[in-house]
Structures are given as structure tokens and as C-alpha cells.
Image (cartoon, rainbow, N blue to C red; front, top):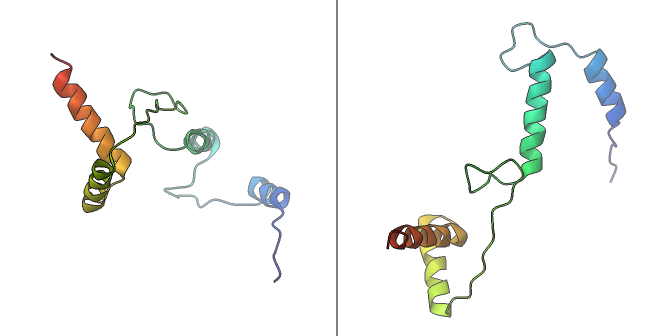
Length: 106
């Protein structure tokens, strides 16, 4: 099996000096707009999954809690998640949020 190894220095040189962008492109960015788009892309890539907290700073991890469940409850969570096309973690997160919201005012 033969594999071509890409020469990234060559590709970067071509992109910086020889590549031409269409004049009226709706997607091609130039100058400061290109730099900002690149920074935003790198920030999103470095941050991993979107934060659960909309107020969180990029790259900030959500707190993690761990709980043991009786087997029957665990199986019910899995069944509910499968029926809803969601992950078990999402179902548990919603359940905890509902419980906290209901009992916080007491």
C-alpha cells in the first residue's frame, strides 16, 4: 500500500503566494477578516465540546458529579434516553435540573 505524504510547507507556501481567490466570493475571506475567522476556528477547535453553561468562557470545563444508581433506575434511564434519542447524561442532567429548580425555593 502506497501512501502520499503531504508536504505542508509546500502547501502553505502555495496558499500564501500563488493561490488566487475568486473576486466576488461569498465565502473567501481576506486580510483582517481571514485572520479573525482563523482565530475563531482555532478557539472553537481548542475548546472541545460546547459548554453546558452559556456563561462559561471558551475552554472552561463544566463541573462533574458522579453518582451510583440502583440497577433498575440505571436501566430505566438508559431506556428513556434510547426512546428519546438522547444520551443518558442528558436525561440525568435534565432530571437533576428539574429537581433542583423545584426544591430551590423551599
